[in-house]
Structure formats: structure tokens, C-alpha cells
Length: 340
Image (cartoon, rainbow, N blue to C red; front, side, top):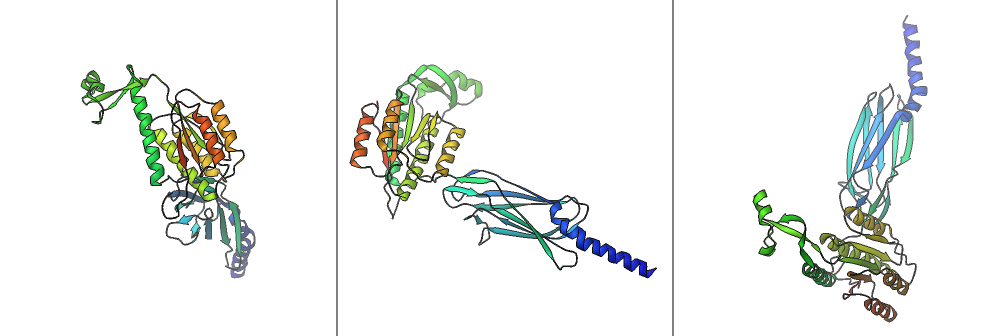
């Protein structure tokens, strides 16, 4: 009887060792997601991973290695790899989060994962790997160059004043909270009485203010072009705050975007900028000709470029002749001590 029990146990061990163990990894299902696909430089990104044992046998030894995108900085780790040692009972799962950041603008591939399982006697291990297919785009950072911000702030202020002058008080399109900065004549007394707090009228405009953000990628060093992308982002966020629709035009791989505004519009542009390899495709002169062809009434121009040559400045003068307003020129002069 003992002999039969011994033989039976031996057969079970051999079955587990040579048949079940090699298949354990095939019954481990790994899925994942990121909380964003468009991020700021150094923004905390959350990776959500889940490992599921789909088989009827427990897996007593699992080593899970997850490789985040290259250059990723994982909280509390010196490398871009995080490891877990665990076991899973049948039909159970292991859920976890990894927090990391990406330091600079660009496109980052998701990385890889490795699942290692062992046999029941500890003699051999089996490794299965796969790609984390998600792609993350990191947008340019905001520009912090004091000179650029001063020029831009003055120009955006002028647009705001022009819009206020062109408001038609007979065309009320809504109401907003009184902040203390609005003139008394704009307070909507009837609406304030209904709601119980001071409200001001939001008037429509007699002229449809719009803008074109023009990026010159024909010349300049990579450092100057990087700064140009940062200025583009800063300009567009300023226009978003004032609810001014804007078109984006470039002569490089940053692409073009039809006129619009709002979160989706801005995110699409930031994705294009994040993907850019800083390549220029045509001359600044050609870009200016396109601006002239596609000009609109009441359009404000923001031209962003590396320091321009004499010929490029001549093209800019040509655009000025077709513009109702003074063009806002923001040159990406690289200062190694301060700036963007």
C-alpha cells in the first residue's frame, strides 16, 4: 500500500514538475493602463498594472519586472525598472500602481514587462515577456523668459482692451460672477437679485477677434527651436484664457491646426509639439505667403522664431502690410544663464 502511495505521489510530482510548471506562465494574464497619454515635463504619471492567474493551479513563485519608458524616473527608484515577487492562488489577481515622471519633451514608448515563473522543485525558471504598447507624449514646458513674457503680456493686454472697446452691450450672451474689477454699468441687477449675489453681463463682440500663431522652424539651433516650442505653448495658453480662437501655422514637423480653441484644440497642438523632431520643411518666406493667403479680418499675429535673418525680417514686414494690428514677434534667444 505504501508503495502505491509513494508511486502515486511521485507521479503527481513529475506531472507538476514537467507538465504543469512549464505552462504556468501561459496562464498569467497581464494588462495595464496609464492615467494620461499627454503629460507635462516632470508630471507624475500613474501606471496601473494587473496580473491575473487564470488557471486552476496556484502559482507559488512569480517575479514580475516592469520596465517603464526610457528616461522615466520612478518614485523611490534609481532605475526605470520595478520588480515584484509574489504568488497567486487560482483565479486571483495582483493589482498595483507605479508612479513615475518623464523629464523632457518628446515621445516615449511604453516599455516592456517580464513574467518569471519557477518549477515546483526550484530547479528551473520560465520567462515570458511582452511590450507595453502605450505611447506617452510629453509637451513642451511653459516659457519662463522674462523678456518674452513681458512682450507677450503687453500684447495680450492690448487684445483684451480692443475686445472690451468692441463689445456690444446690447448683445448679452450670458452672466458671470462679479470680481470687483468690472465697471458698475456691467452689473446685471435683475440677475443678481434672482441668484442672491452680484453678477455681470457677458457681452458679445461687434468684431470677431481671432489670432494666428506662426512658428518658424526653418533656421536656428535645436536649443532655439526647443525654446520656440515653449513660447508657442505659452502664447496659446494665454489665448485660451481669453477665449480667443487661434490658428496654428508652421513650416516644419510641428504641423498646422485649423482655427479653434478649447481643451481638445490645445491638447492636439501640444501633442503635435511634443512629437516634433525640430525639422523644418520650407522657408520662412513661404510660411509668410501662406499667412497672407489665409488672412482674416481682426486677426492678431504671433510670430515665434529663432533670431531672424535680414531676409526673414523683410518677409515679416510684408505680412505687417496685410495686418490690422502690430505683429507680436517673439524670438527664442537662448541665454545660458536665464530663460526658458
